[in-house]
Length: 138
Image (tube, rainbow, N blue to C red; front, top):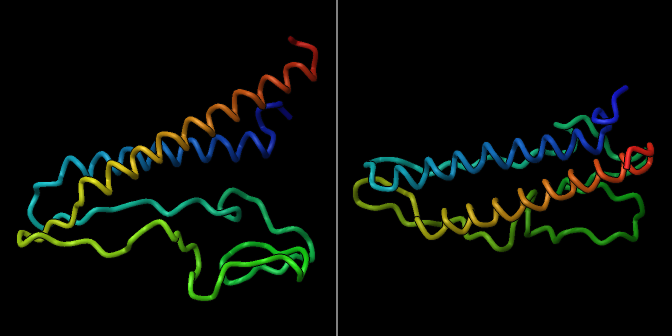
């Protein structure tokens, strides 16, 4: 087994690929901001199950998708719903032409996506550096 085949590195690679695909989709939304009838699209975040990870043994998974290993753990409120993001406002105005792209919202998503990608890329690099130190290559 190669050092780069570790589950942590695989998760980070998957996350980086997801951020790259999301950035392309957000750019497409911005590029089509004036096209009649165009509706903006976004990618769903990859879940732990989609990258081959499972909840810890004995963990109860709540309606919000978060594994709780202890009944005393605090969960999201029931009104938040599954995968709810309290910062996002789901409503947006649709122009008379049928276009639903809100440029401000798309640019905010693109900025958040870029900073998240940089974080994941930094974690990936630091993990590789730690593995090199561990095997004596550095």
